[in-house]
Length: 398
Image (cartoon, rainbow, N blue to C red; front, top):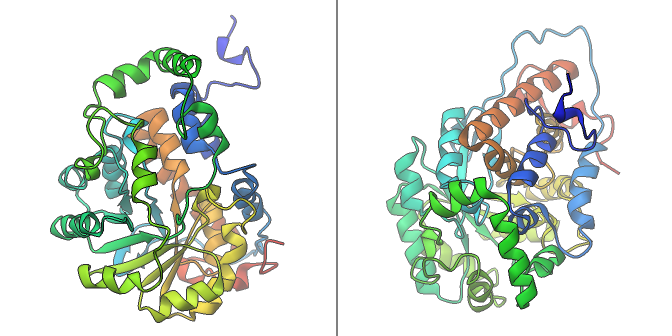
């Protein structure tokens, strides 16, 4: 009997996804091209995006034998919060466009797995909707806007919702040039022919139309309802970004953030050791080593290549997390070995959610847990606290 899923070896149907790559392929099939390219793409030639993954794969671990690893503890604390895994679901804008009420589904899966979810300023679901639907209070990610009063209002809303951790994204002084978004008309204008192709693309994905475009309403930025009207996602996105992202933000603005936020402040987007020292001098509780998933400065170092330098510069005065290129529990172990307290994942959970909704995110997190436990058993450690540079053959991915 012919099996149709074997007809194209280069496009297998993953009946049982085993990896992030499997979920990525399912997401590619199920999403309109414009949306898939938005989450999947990077800036310019996407060299930094590729380096994030490639450099992690070159971090070599020491395989050790004849050690008692019958019990392996993967739980930890991050910024005072108990985590069942050293993992956080990173803030991803537009997430509710990839599955029905996507941020709600992801937050519920994260809470069930015992890890934190970070709500993006540019989420489709509002912070209040996400908080009401989940048993775990999320983190909140903030961009510093020209309209400081609006940002202050967002911080007040996050505080009222019980959020204790504010992730301040600082690497968008200007938005990286993303060729895929330009081609798809998400960035800049689009011709009549391009608009027609886009409509055809969306209509050719009827499952997405039913699940998201119709059943997933309202499709607006839930945290920016006064700024971006309902029914104008993603058309108004670029206009809002151009009008509100503030290239004049400096380190001195951290004092303003601290004035309006009583919880932990984590600065996301640091690659340079000098910037890490400056962040610590301004009293932040955490730093996320990140190049925005390769979506900003193409040619910047990969996150894993920058990690050890930032860790050394901070000298335990703040917790250091890493974001960028993490595609497995093995990658989490590699990052922990170079000094990260935990990792954030963005694209992986979006792929899983686009493919299989909340169940996909739950399965992905369970897979990361299992992969971490396997890696720990083979390097001979039974607690994540033991994952230090001593488990590395080399201390650098290069």
